[in-house]
Image (tube, rainbow over all chains, first blue to last red; front, side, top):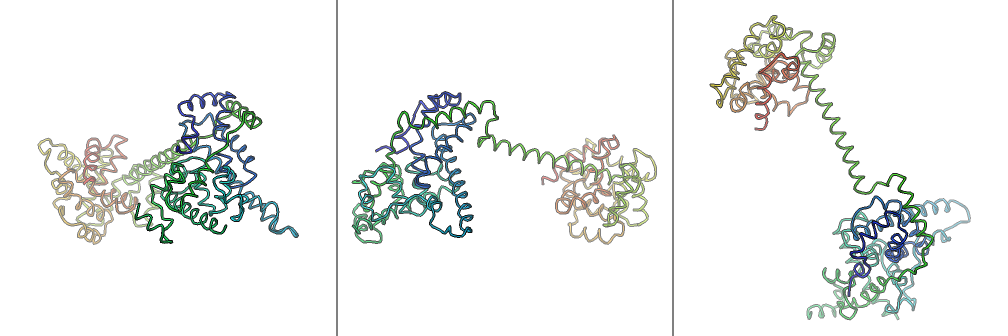
Length: 204
Length: 314
């Protein structure tokens, strides 16, 4: 079984595609987009739910604006794109938090509104029958399931590792943690997932 | 494996996971059937999460068009700073700051040396001397021989040493007063440049010559510090305090015994270093740096500087 990263790799073609994209070649830009967009949306969906597509589009525009200045290999490019996505995510959460604070001061606009719901991905209920049949899940459902079972920091680490296909060091750089911390978090995440999945299976 | 299976049946350790298995799970390299006990569902879930759908040919057309436009437009716009170039720019700023600090240090040091040697323009020298006199530091008011005179007034034995250093700097220029000091300067210069003494300790000789036999070469620092304090003449204090401890090291590396004061300067403030350089042989070094620019000190300057550095390295 190959890793997600190698499964979804441009290989030796990457540098040629990157160069063409940096010169504004539409086919090359499209290739880069189609290559990483699913992983990008998968990661973002785990954090912002239905707003993932919008955030992904913003991320791609930011990538395009900086594309000519980028130099590096496929792994570095992947890491760079997800670094930008992570920053957009942080900005998004901050903006939503500000909006919530403002709204909470407005009479009759209590918690539980649409804005608050938009802050987190819609978690799948552990009792949701669709969530129990793991093997039949789509990537989207699996991501939502992971997010519903884990604390936010552990879920983010796991999504960056599994969905984005990034190495521990890249995840550490993106999230501003030490590699050792990332390893600890991912280990805890796996153990917690195992416990929660087992519990939900027994409940059924 | 048997150990793990047993542990797996024991409840609390059922979900124990070693580092390697965790890494393989995260890489999608573990089939659910081969997963550690309790991790079959996890492997399944992670595999599902990683099975990303392909993007259709027509999907994202609007985003791709916007991306192409952004890339092409970025040609005429300065490229956003990438990680590397941003770092380079920060390094540039850092080095610029350091260069500025170094330049400021050089200017201040040269100014202090010039003030110590009394070679600043008369009005400036007067202002500086007046200013620092409030904190107990005596600098030549107008000319170096003033300091020498003051030293003489104090009447301490060590004044000779002090005067020697002080007047040596100006003797060449002015040829006034402090004739004794000027003569000693030449003598000391002769000693330091005597090829017959190359490779031999010159410090003690210089010290003895400069202090008319009053040199306390080899005395420990504390003792000399006390001795310096006893003397009333500020020039004497610093002169003796620096010359003496420096002499043993000067005897090894520093024929002029100059940079004995470096040690003291290193542990005290710059101001104090400046003071000590005023009247001690060390001062001759620093002052020579300043006066050397006007061609006063000649050889003594170079000798003092070079040897002083090696002495400091000790």
